[in-house]
Image (cartoon, rainbow, N blue to C red; front, side, top):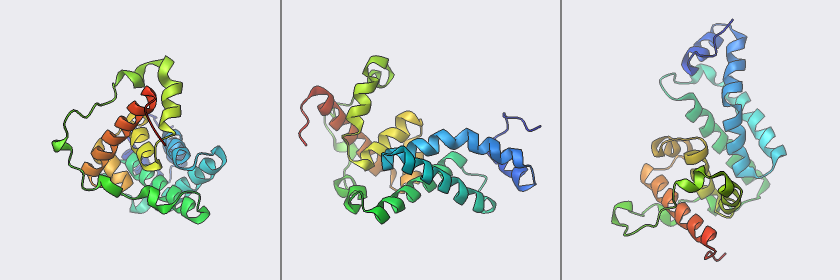
Length: 192
């Protein structure tokens, strides 16, 4: 019987050595995160379920190539992001420009004055969760992904950058811009 306490890397090794239960544990451990990120991009549970299956199939096929020195969750979420974007491109549900770095690429956070960050308490207060979730859905998809990965998955800016294939400064910039837009939405000052 395989222990649930084993690390992802240990489970990958166990699976590659023939222990089928190790793969089952890995899927159970990361299923929710993969599905949630896919849902953030696709906005339908059916499509998110399909992408989740595709992600785990891709991961299974490439598990021998996986670098065990890297975070498996980050690797899976990177696959999820790429698979979701490929799906959207094929369906043309979202303009490709929605995933561009746009003006965030040259944005220098150090030069900001009074950035008005959203209070962390908003993410913790249950009475504001529904309102916040609705506000997040009003953000562009690239901002939604950064907010989701940061606050739902608890990832660092560096990990988010790896998943989204963006420089850390761009991720920080998009995070800050998303928080500012969320503040405006929640204050009722946001114009579409």
